Image 1: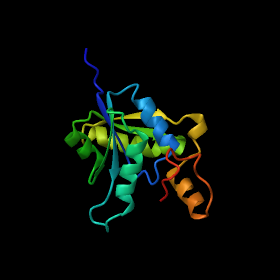
Image 2: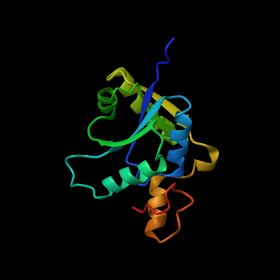
Image 3: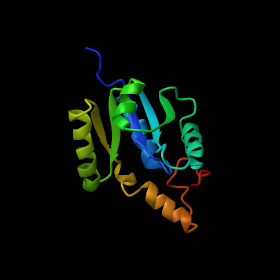
Image 4: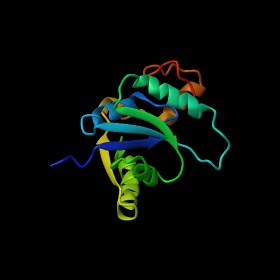
Length: 155
């Protein structure tokens, strides 16, 4: 029997991409043949100059790994999943609050759009890390190099 989950889409703003995100991708590669890291953007909003920077920074983290692709998309994540030929959405869960929110989205994506979601719980050592925490620390001049895989990347 052929595995059902060949390619997953790990979607988010990843502003910035953290070591928690990196760990989810690395663990997902034990389950999926390929992970597409898809950075969402709203085409109705002004161009985000950090978008290209995020694609480049995340690409450097997985440089040389053909099983990881980094791209951007707009619109519904489930539509992008189908357009990309992926079979599932990949989501990291840090806590029960994340789970409740993500479960509702997963239910809609499955029921209305026919796309499965696979959840991976964050490693305990990464469960406190979020992009918003990293941005806030950076805004106040704190060193976040232990929280992001590419310490040179700043929002």
